[in-house]
Length: 281
Ligand SMILES: [Zn+2]
Ligand SMILES: [Zn+2]
Image: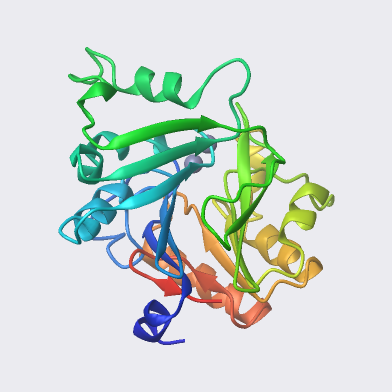
């Protein structure tokens, strides 16, 4: 699949950040990328953003200068690696822009606005969220709700197995589907039925593949899964393309190459997410 061809299509995902836990720029991660989670999904020109990790900064730089932007930003959850690009999202400072921020993991105890306010509070951060000049509204939904942010775009949501909760998304447009399932932990030998239902027969599934199966026993209850579990779930759910995502910061490019080769051997067509990659269903 040619990157530029995919970018021309109506429905595609572009990866701006593919790392889990903490950004890890440097010569050893330059090919796969060091920024934390951020996806751009286009549905017939409409912009949907998923997560506000450090990758969001470059997404903002890319969309600024294209006139005004009207977009929806969906958070899987509000752990730092999924929100800490937000204060550096230049598009949020442009009064011509309009954003709707969405989260499904906080209601009723907390709200998305509360969590972002907690991030942007002195002395942790010098200015509060009121510094954003764009028209921004905050929407807390209840996980499992079906969202219809734009005409023809359907988002199905499901709860993930993660400390402090997280939301998995299935984006459906023009008869195709892209699923975004991070952060989540599996139980060895027990395929997650909630995830299987969310990703059933999907075209593209982007899944929390932080660890290898060999590493996993050391990280039980940290809230993450493995690339092998990604492949097992995608096989069981008849998914077309499995995408390994949320790479552990300790996995340098050489380690990711080894994972990519092994994954391609086990399941040809498997993709390892890297910054700048564009995939169309
Ligand atoms: Zn994460
Ligand atoms: Zn997390």
